[in-house]
Amino acid sequence: MHKHWLAVAGLLLMTGCTSLPQTSRTAVIHDVKFEATLAPADLTVHVGDEIRWVNHRTLPVLIDIPGLNAEMLSCDRGFTGMMGGVTELKELDPSKSASLCFSKPIVISYNARMRSADPGGMKIEPGTIRVVGPAQ
View (spheres, rainbow, N blue to C red):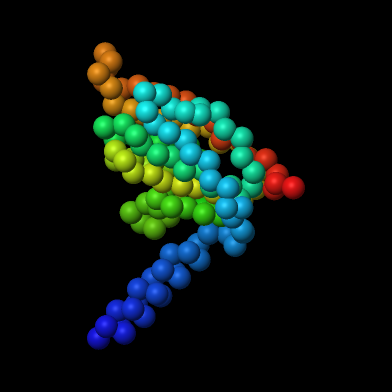
């Protein structure tokens, strides 16, 4: 019985990874932190670098990346939606993170929607990720 569950788990893990393009990661990780503000709001990375959004706040943060799709990515840690595809919206609970790696040069604009005590209760911080060619 135990071997059966291990085989099923292994198959599910392999199946979950097959939808992304087969490109390599560079092992370079860039943290984007949600604290009082989004930092850094403007980030330049290389193809294959990992961008990790980390919520250091006490409230959830909603990351909105319009147009995000699996064809752009070489890794996805946390942006997979309920139906198995990549989602444009990711809610990050306090002390949690989610990551993406991009497979080709691209400029991505996104918004971080952070609950706040400010009038209106929501602070929106724009961010930009510039993905340039592979590191030399």
